[in-house]
Amino acid sequence: MTGEPPAGGWRVGVGNPYEPDQLLAVVALTDHGIATRLIRRWSVGGAPRHHLLDPCTGDSLETGLDSVTVVARDAWMAEILTKAAFVAGPSEAMALIAARGGAGLLVESAERIVAAGEFAAFFAPLDREPVLCGATR
Image (cartoon, rainbow, N blue to C red; front, side):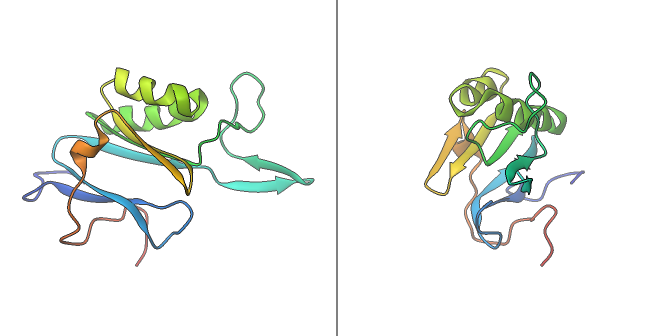
């Protein structure tokens, strides 16, 4: 989305990685970018695999995160921080995101969803439909 945001900001839905038709949050953005990264899993020879690789081993990364959403001043930084959060793992990811001026939502499981930085400051009420980036309805 580009240009002047509508009143109240651009409203962006943050999808639930476990229930595709549900939202975890809706955020309002006027001068920030947002990025979300999900783990997409498959199996090779009975071993679980996914597309994010451990930079030290080249194997699929297993840090306990299933989804990371980051809001940052620039969209490119939000994208970088989502990947860095996965590599860092949940305990270090919160500090990493906040130290670079970002805010995030870390999903470890359906029961454990943690806000990093000032993510709550971007929450928007559900009084109208958000933009669902990449979704078809």
